Figure 1 (cartoon, rainbow, N blue to C red):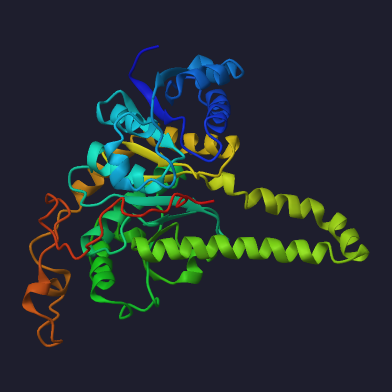
Figure 2 (cartoon, helix red, strand yellow; figure 1 turned 45 degrees about the vertical axis):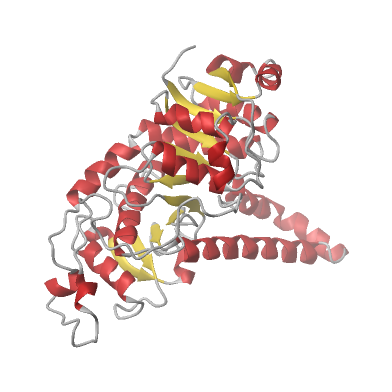
Length: 391
């Protein structure tokens, strides 16, 4: 089998790789019979595993990689590992051999490699990490989840555009609602960055979908389909949500094992508990997407199992099939702004508020990177966290 391949797969990334990866591809090959995978890793081990999984064997071509990027490896060291399974998967996307890639490996390394080797889409200043989570009204998309600790106005607007396309592509929504995470829902709350980003979004082509500001509790409530924030806040919110779910699970276990009556009560509610467990199964939400790169890059949780990895492959397949990056390019072209800041267009006098005149710089999403305000200082890939994807 020769390229182009649908997806390149880092077979050596993840706590249980490569067994989990090959088993997951066996599930994925059944759901996507036309997909072709470039499986990269230890050739001897992979061929032995493929012999046990016929569907995966028929869909995969193995490419040997002599090195592995470990979970402890710093992004700078990962960049020097040119023969690792992750690097070769990234190279395959950059060279056009594959339309996208899936890896359960080191998050910081994958983001750094993607940023430097695959590069960002034209007009995108920084990539962001997006993922799907549960809410009271259905699935919700959230970004950024840790790629950019500091964000400026341009970054947040770009994230909103990419989140909109992500929700339409992966969730199948025709007009997803979008909210900016803030300390309050009132228009005057927050700093200039979120207020200016909100003003740009209200006046853009996705203005009718823009709900305005949302608070932390709105994430679980499902107030909007897409929640946009900076990477620091998004990662804290993600980890807080994960911790809350674990705590609730522990409490429920204590309640239903506290005595004979409690155990009998569990038998009565078990069908409902099974449905709840299925609804909140972290494997259903596995697969964080590094949106904004010039190729599809999906990060699977490092500790997932074969079913969870197969779901990450599903996410990547959806994005490739529905031309995710092409739709981002089209939407970015529609948000071309003039040279005035949102405040100036509304006639608001920043000088009266004590703001410096240079703070009213223009932001044009259609301009090349560097033409916009660049308040953020963090470098994508600087995170050493290897489990940023939803657990």
